[in-house]
Length: 614
Image (cartoon, rainbow, N blue to C red):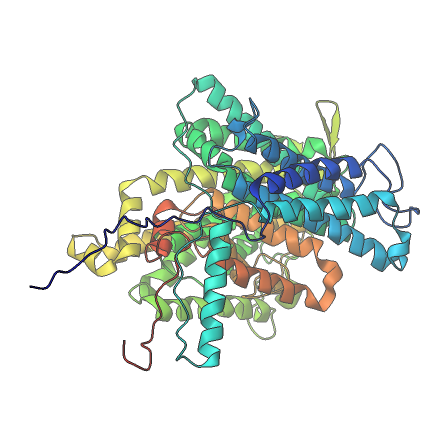
C-alpha cells in the first residue's frame, strides 16, 4: 500500500505585501514630507522670488504674495490641510470624506506645476535662473518635496497580468505600458465616499451658498487675470485643486446637498451671477460676461436637440442668425429694408418667432432622417442660410439683408424707459452698457433654464430621452417620433432666436460671417456642439460651464497666435479621451460610458492568444 503525504494548505500561509507607493519611501516619512513640503510652500510665497519687477506680478516683495505666488499659496495651503487631515487632526477630517491620499497627490501636483511653471517663466523672461531670489528656490524645493512624499503614499495596487515572453518586443512594450498606466490610475484612485449624513436644511443651504461664493470668486479672478502667465497658472491651479477636492469627496458631498435643494441652488446661482458686474471696476469684463451668457443660452437650446432628443444638429447657429436678423430688421436700423421700429417685446417675439418658423420648416421634411444623414442636412441648412444672407444684397438676390455688410447701426434697447446703451447707477456703483445687457441676458438665460428644466421633467421630455436611447423601441411603445422630434427642433430654434435678438443689439451689427459652422470666434455651430459635449449632454449646468470655458479660454489664449486652435483642440481631444461624459455629466450617460470598465485600476486580460494558443 502506498501512502501519500500531503502538506496542509495553511502550513505556510501566504502573507500579502503591505501597500506601497509609486516611490519606495516608508509611509511615515512620506506623509511628513508631503505635509512639511506644503507648509514650506506656503512660507515661500511670503518671500521674494525675483529681484526685479520686470516680471509681471511684482514677486519682489517680502511678506505679501503677489501674482502667481497667490496661486501657489492656495495650492500649498490645500496640500497642508489635507496633509494634516491625513494625521487625523480633529476638525480637519471632514474635508476629506473619501480619504486624503489621492487628494494629496493632486494638491501636491497643483503646487508643483504652478510653482515650477512660474520659475521657468521667470527664467525665460529675465534670462536665466540667476534671476531667482531665495523664495523661488525654496518654493521649487518645497513643492518637489511635497510631490515626492505624495507619490510615495501607499495604495492598493491593482491586479496586472504578466508579460507573455513569447510575444514580440513591441507587444511586450505595449503590455508593460498598459500595466504601468493601470498602476498609475490605481495610485490616484480614491475610495467612494459614504453618502453624507443629512444636516439641518439651513446648514446644507449655507454649504451651497459658500460653494456658490467660491465659484463666483474663482470666475471673477479668472476673467480678470491681467497677463498670460497668470492665466495659465490659474488654469493649472484650478484644474488640479478641483481634482483634489473631487478625490477628497467634497464635490460629491456638495452635489448631494444641491440635489436636495434644487430651487435654492438655482436661485443662488443666478444671484451669484448677478453679483458679477458689481465685482468689476469698469465695463471691460462685463463684455466677456454678456457674450458668455449669449453663448451659454444658445448652447442650452442646442442641448434640448442634442442632449435630450439625441438629434445631431450641425447647423444650429443658423437659428441664432435668423433671430438676430429678424429682430434687427424691426428695431429701427437704417440698414433695414423695413421701416419698422418695434419695442423690445415686439422685437424679441419676432426674433424667437422667426427662428421657430424656420425650425419647423427645416425640421418637417428632414426629421424623418436619422444619425449622419440628419447631421449632413442640418449642416447644409446652416451653410445655405449664411450664403443666402450674404447674397441678399439687391444684386445677387433680393435686397433683404444688405449682403456682406449686414444690418448695421442697430439702436440700443429701451425697456420701460430704461436705456441699455447708457450708464446707470445701481447701489452706488456705475453700471455700463455691457453690464446692462449682462443683466438682461441673465434674465433670458434664467427663462431658458426654466424651460429646459420643465421640459426635461415633462412627458414630452421623457419621450425625447426614450427616442435618444432607442428610437425603434420608442416608436414600438406608441411614441409619435416625428412629432416629438419636431417639437424639440422647434423649441431649440426658438430659444436660439431669443438669444439672437439680444446679440443683435449688443453687437450693433449683424453680418453673415458671424454664423459660420466653424470659426475661431464663438458662437458657431462647432463651438456650440463642443460646449454641449464638453459640459455634459442632457444637463443644465454642463452647457453653461462648457460655454463659459470655450469662450473664456480662447479669449485668454490669444497670445498663442496661430497655435491657439491647436492647443485648444488638443485639450478637447484629451478631455474626450479621459472624460467622454463631460465635465458635469448626466448620471445615466456617465454609467453608459463606464459600464464596460472593470473594477477601478484593473488591467483587462490580453486580447490576443499567445503563440501556444493558450
